[in-house]
Length: 208
Image (cartoon, rainbow, N blue to C red; front, side):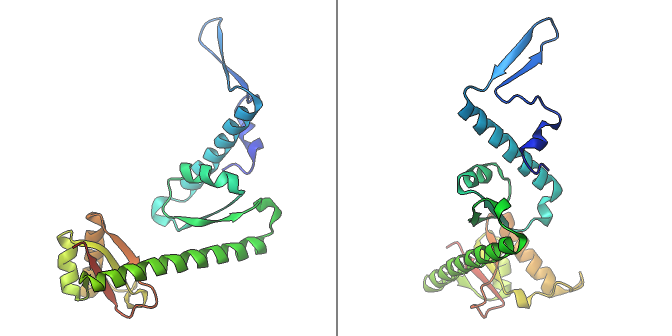
């Protein structure tokens, strides 16, 4: 994964605005990128794609966590458009990260993640309140399992403290929870850890 744009030149022509390639004859075709401004844009996108490719190759999809960008504001939209990563935290640590030490990056990252988590929790609580008022909230685990299998769940919320991640494969409760989550996702629903404000160990939100 490149650290800066100089790393891109290891196996490529150093000219950005004019590159050439042989055609198997005495002729050479030239490809120009236009003026300096366009050349800079092309070079920036090339660097961004190299960074993203290196990151996604280094961290496989099953091991990925929410991604927080630290970049100047103008570059954030470009990176978001290239990334094949879910989720990317909406907030961004703005400014040149080269001008921040490790402690400052950690502090800024903690603030951004905390704010993002808070907004996500507020959104989930609002959806739960709406489901309660419209009688789409499902609390019984057997009923939730049936709804999930039938594709009737829009979302399932799991209390983090109620999940025994060390449970053996034969554990009936763990298997039921696993089936609920898998069936919900397979039918286009969402699965979330419940906000701390919810006391229920498991809660489903029906589509209708």
